[in-house]
Length: 266
Image (cartoon, rainbow, N blue to C red; front, top):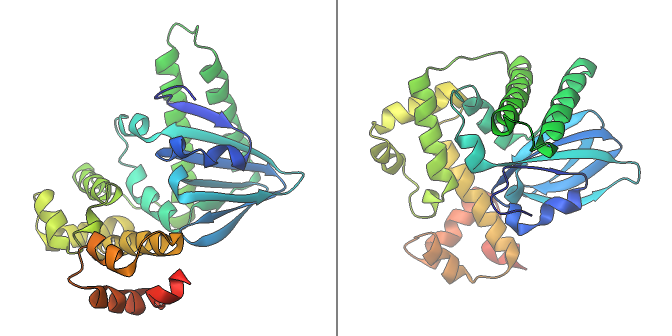
């Protein structure tokens, strides 16, 4: 893989297991058959005419049928974040975090196939005089069509640019792992120069969930993953997540995950 390559195509789930792709966003388009992967401690099956979107780091390929035909577009997250006018993606990003799979109609499948073909063609033809621009426009068109499909599923809910920027900042803090140490909304609100009440209200308006929900969602998924890795003691994890004691950490896990840490580590 070339260093800092922005657009990559793969054609097998096995190909996205490369740890160097962890911060890439994967868009998986299943054209035939089916494949399965782990996602946030769940097992998900992608079938013909389905599309899925997730960061590669959250996917763990498990297998695919012998007749599976899948196209995978990998986009560097830094590359995507450099695009302007991405307000439309904020709510969709969080909705896809909860459920990364969309089933497409025949017309939607045709549109996404055309987008994949356009990006794939121009990604290979670097001799194009306007290579960077045409490739970026192709990726942006694909994302616009993708989030339009998502908006059709839920009904379009508009948010102002100011609110979208606030949610982008909030999501960026969660992605960088602030929840390891900070579980209160006040920390995020102060960093974003708004009140905790305002952040909670905007989060619920833009995503349907409170800011506290997203903080706990990221935290608990990360905890469950580390517990299942069997690489850390309860004491180490309690320290890592800034709990005052291992016993407090144990009570938190039992209450919020429904299982004791020892059970999860067996």
